[in-house]
Structure formats: C-alpha cells, structure tokens
Length: 113
Image (cartoon, rainbow, N blue to C red; front, side):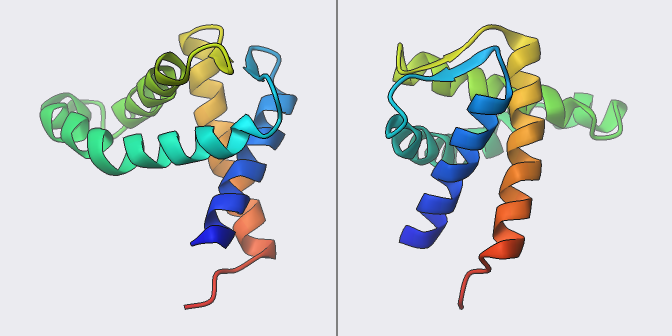
C-alpha cells in the first residue's frame, strides 16, 4: 500500500511539473494530493458516475473524462493553495496525463500481490 502511495505521489509530481496550469507548491504535498485523489476516486466518483449514467451512455462513455476533470477540480478545492489547477481544461489534461504517467510507473514498479 505504501508503494502504491509513493507511485501515485510520483505520478502527481511528474504530471504537475509537466503541465503549466497545475502546481503542487511544496513537492511533498504530492503525497497528500495522492491520498485525497484516491479518496475522491474511491468514494465520490462512483456516486457521480452512477447519477451521470444516462448522459454517459448517450456520449458512449466520453462523459467520464468530464467526471475525471471534475474530481481533479474537487481535489484542488479541498486541498487549497498547495494544489492549484487553473481551470477545467487543465484539470482534464491533468487527469489524462496522470493516468498515462501512473500506468507507465506501474509498469516499471509492479505491485506484489
């Protein structure tokens, strides 16, 4: 579990340094961003996806990108000045790049089950 947290925090750091519209002020706040983002994705995102199921079906699943961006904006709002996202489009880009970076890091550091 600690390995996953460190990989997620590293993914947040890499993504934040890659995109200009996203900042993680002290670098160690990436751990807190990873925890909050994990909590939001585990508890709030499924409820939002359930309520948005009709529009998600109409858009053939593309509305999931909007939901992911909204979860990133929610994390930015919850954490405050240490994790700032400049707008919806930066949140959308952050969620896409974070997914790719996290996937790449999990390829290099697979979790042992």
